[in-house]
Length: 209
Image (cartoon, rainbow, N blue to C red; front, side):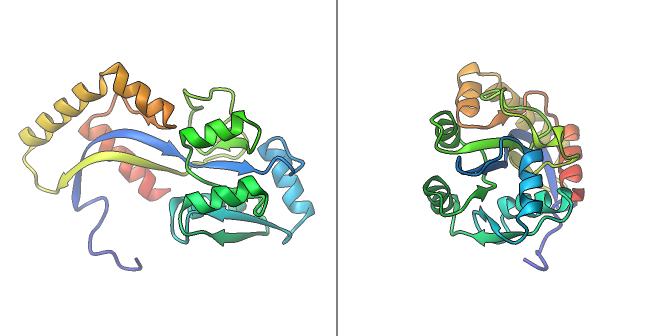
């Protein structure tokens, strides 16, 4: 939307960030690259010959792909927008598209383990708990962070006692190890130390990025 009818920072109170799902840089195993640096070098040597798939124009996966091109030094890689991540992942596994930048899921981690795709990096600040051997993109490219987040929000002006009560209950739910494990196995990173102040700062930082 060119002109959203709301300000994502000022029109809402961010009560808590519950979990973060990072995008990733994934290639088909036939591509002769093993890490982000070698993919950048390969893309520069094959300018205009590579393409990457996203879940659709304007999605965070599209943003991740364009951020990678920018931070990689202005890479010439063609964007192929799909109607959702599912069709794009199917084409990645089949080799029709060589690169994709989807959000990490349990399914993608399984495909990586099976050797059907190669996850070069996750676009997050820290490595995933579910896959600590996969590096982060920021280990190679500064600020290569592109992620979606699940959180609890309320309209601006919501009384602070209500905000605090909802935050307390959210923290109680997240303290459940079984719930944490479900999130981790699904590719999400639980945010265990959130608060209304930390959550609001997180939103402001993401909006700026």
